[in-house]
Image (cartoon, rainbow, N blue to C red; front, side, top):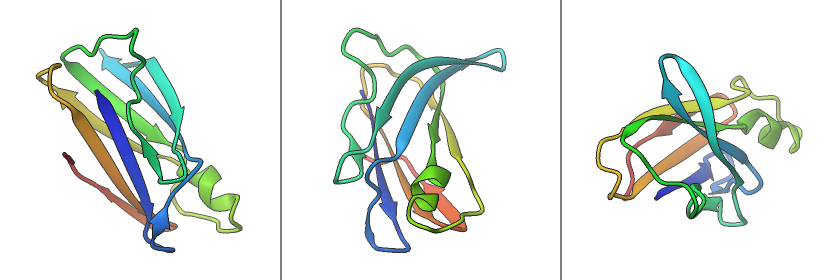
Length: 111
């Protein structure tokens, strides 16, 4: 399972309505695996469809943060945030939180 949560640090609220794309990365090529949009709580509880299996591989989550901010009248420095991570044990849950502001971001491995 791959999940995410986005918090907008500039407002202290969840970032709802952010498009997120999951891709596997093989030999420098990005292969789309899933797409989702954060809910009112800024979450996507399971990005990978039940029909798709999680494999041990390198993945990338791309967050469309620019669209999120510009829809609120803010013009951010980062139009998109991409986070690469490695799945070593497909049986584990992988939670990738993202903290954003118009001019910076941070992420970590959540639980």
